[in-house]
Image 1 (cartoon, protein in one colour):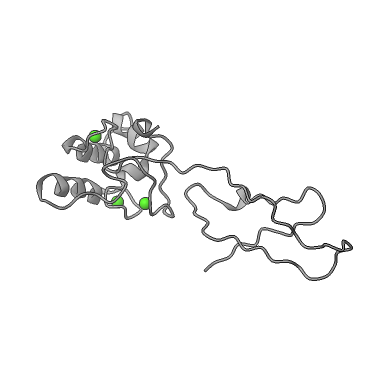
Image 2: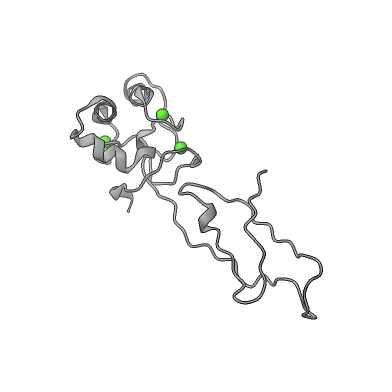
Length: 156
Ligand SMILES: [Ca+2]
Ligand SMILES: [Ca+2]
Ligand SMILES: [Ca+2]
């Protein structure tokens, strides 16, 4: 496990913010607090954990719906090809760009022709459903990749 040292709490205010250490899509599963021995004058020294607050939100979307029509159909595979190979004003440049995770149909952390093929396999080759979130809105279970989802209005 990789720990990220955030700092030492002393005096007032006694808060630490992990925001500078976090990128969108990062997950933090564990937070470790250690009482530093010595150095304090208070008879009750040591940090109290009064409140551990997290304000944040993880984007939710439906995988494969690259043209934001709610359905996953052949137009979504075409949309990925438009995004990859189309003119700069192709409509799918915008819809895919706003929710790259949705276009990562095979959830391998990249958008390429394999994602169009994965959608076609699902539609025509009984290739199985796409990785979650597929049937309903949800977060990307593999959020550590470089892709994000800034906006997918059907899940708002
Ligand atoms: Ca669609
Ligand atoms: Ca992919
Ligand atoms: Ca992912």
